[in-house]
Length: 315
Image (cartoon, rainbow, N blue to C red; front, side, top):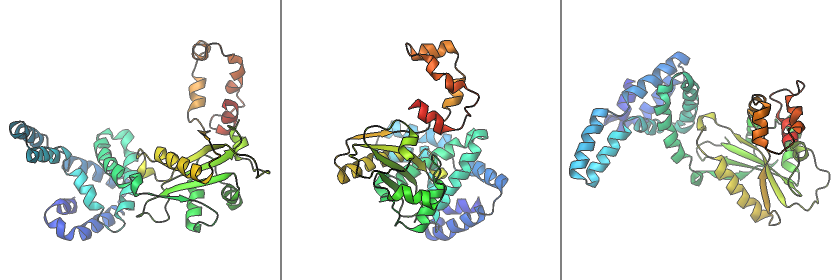
């Protein structure tokens, strides 16, 4: 905490890199309790000072000039964001902060007072990981081995069984694989999406992911069937929407015959939600639909957490 104070003080300007590095080294050996105490203290010590904010508000209302407005903005922001900015000066500062926020997120459910600290970090991440700074890369079988290994590790929607499974997804003519990378996080994908080309919209996820035998089909549709955030520390830093829009552009440039774009993805929590509905509520939602066709969803043989069967039926 003393080092954090030094980092945002005047003397921290000259020796910021060394101080920031020392803070990251100390944090790296903290246990869970120490991390929680650290977050609570910096959240409290570097939060905006309400008295100072009120003072700056009064000053702005009296003067109403750019200088008093900037002073008010600085008072409202406090020192938490400045501390995070200066921690980023450490060697590997950006990956450290992503990892640190991953730790912080785990504490939020039972420590809601830390949400303000998390919001400050997320606010900065939204600028630092702006899509304009990111590099879109088409992942192929010829991509770096380190990248391919991480793709296998981070795939959570449709697990990649082995290297042969990965090779099939990357080499088939009807598949495309794109990922966003940040210049500072070398060979570390931030988010990636898997795309399948089909003739018309696919009827089920099984149809989408099964190996194709005819590679000369007249494809007109691209289906985004798996999108994965790789860094938990970047949770709620919106990248998926930008990635999909960018990939749509890349696919249209490569293959103008692709006119239709869609998604076919699991619905987390769908089974729990459905089973909680009464027959009356279901009838009210579905109106004239024959609800008996959905009786299979209440079958004891259908295990919650097996999205493949749900996807096939729901499609």
